[in-house]
Length: 68
Ligand SMILES: [Zn+2]
Image (cartoon, rainbow, N blue to C red; front, side, top):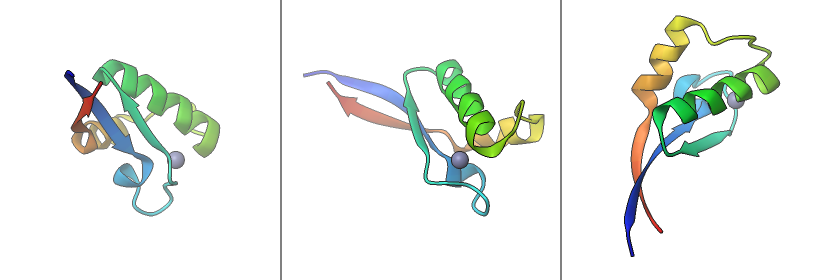
């Protein structure tokens, strides 16, 4: 058994009002940001993530241990 560290983020963590139940997990922050950008585009009609929101996203990222 090995523990892996994953980055986890919920849409509601970034937008307590207006967010949705979307949750994402990725191995790296870069990967997570990409998934978040895709989600923002598909579900919230944001063509790109504003800098202010990107900062919120980064602040809301939690590192969670995952046992593989
Ligand atoms: Zn959402």
